Length: 124
Image (cartoon, rainbow, N blue to C red):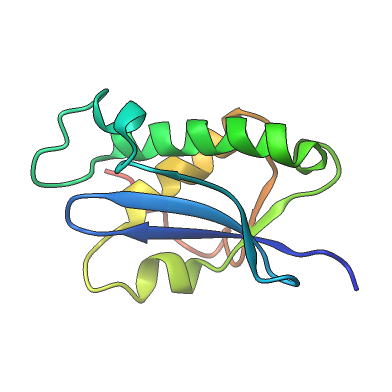
């Protein structure tokens, strides 16, 4: 069975966490969150998590992935179900989720987004 790595992004009113999950073995391979002191201290998060903080979460996650799972930047990649990560949330998390995806891609991590071409990015 081929290994499937899935990107899961959780956004609340104040914080965000991004996890890479090995779907076959149901375990988290790498994680980054605005709750972490190193990320939290870099931003004035205030009442909500913004795109800049979300981008930093993506950068940290990419660095951790390249340390833990070096093949991800090569032939492997991450998968993300856009419906589950953006459209089914109670508030608009699109800009923050895309900031994480863009940061991962800038760091050389392949991210495959279901229906990416047919979805209008809600960047603001």
